[in-house]
Image 1 (cartoon, rainbow, N blue to C red):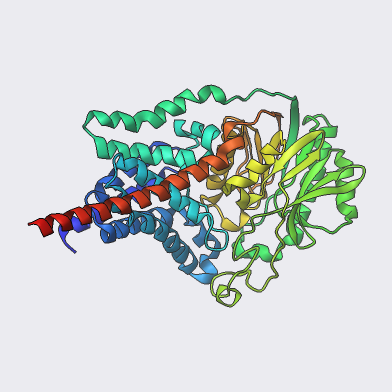
Image 2: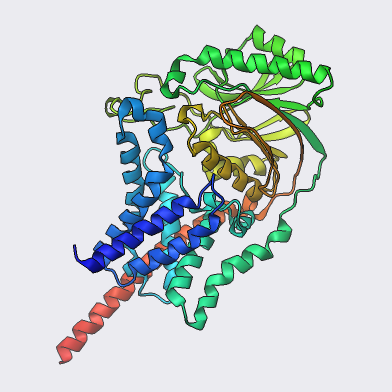
Length: 493
């Protein structure tokens, strides 16, 4: 490989690594912009094949550190292959769209069209294969910076567009006066600030999160279901005692984390525990072949429930089962049944929107809940599988972005932490540590106004996708036209 190529690939890898550092738990959100400045400069003048290679180098340098928590989860039993294969697969999406960059770079305002292609690869990663894997979207690393405010208009796709366009635009148009266009996203982010409110509109609710904790065993959790249940029953009894003694305020609603128990249609032990607490409780449980959240009343017991719609591939549903045995411990377990209804439950006089764990990465899940009248969003999750790595912080960042997007407080209930109460502006009110049992009680505002993103975020995403595809068509037409002109000129000569 020639030295100029080595410099290009080194720059692309450096940019990908910088992008990884911009994500939680770090607050280096601003690193994403110089990452895309450097990436554009590495791509400058490259043909389709070289652009694809540079995109792969960028993607791999990003996903390898970003997904390192998979190695925490599966590494001791399966080696590095699950982590490496998933990182390579995700990098191939960036590789594919970068191959199209030379096509759209022929068009006026090339950074706009290149940015749209980058957003397109995030869209595709969230769809294929097997319902996709929408982790590592640029927007999810921006919750501590000004770009996140744009989520109130267009959700995660618009935030990603703003960040990538700023970087690409600064690199492409510097030092010409047109570089000012690259600053439009920052100006827009500041301009939409008045649309973000944390004020209660229909009262407030005091919510308790029961974090019973889990053993830090990784795959050993497969046999620890009874321990998880006992931990959360014990912590619920402790909450009841503290409330009766006046040490904690009486909550209006309690929340258990994802898969804290298994239960059937009847569960006298849970009935007794929640009756003793005397507070309606959202119990996250495996029930009747579904990953569910059940509205449990202290007097009448189990009521309506929500079933998780987006099941984790190779964990909650197993495609390619014979091959899956090579890299997942869940290959011989039966598939869970996916839910089909939006995640909204009426409990404690509150309409609560629900997205279970992995679902918070998908735009439509909590958008449907908010559009269906949810006044508060709840995200039960079980991150205990992944050890003390960055996964739980990455997921919390997603929940914080959803708070801004839909103008709702979000309560994250994690089985081993980090649990958190998030304001509608994405800021964290209170949070817990990791691998500790804890109780968290706080008051959150209830809101009913629908943000522009809740109403039209899906349409914004379709528009961005359509423009990306239109840019490819326009680039092809421009290239064909240039070839015909060249041929005609050659014939005349």
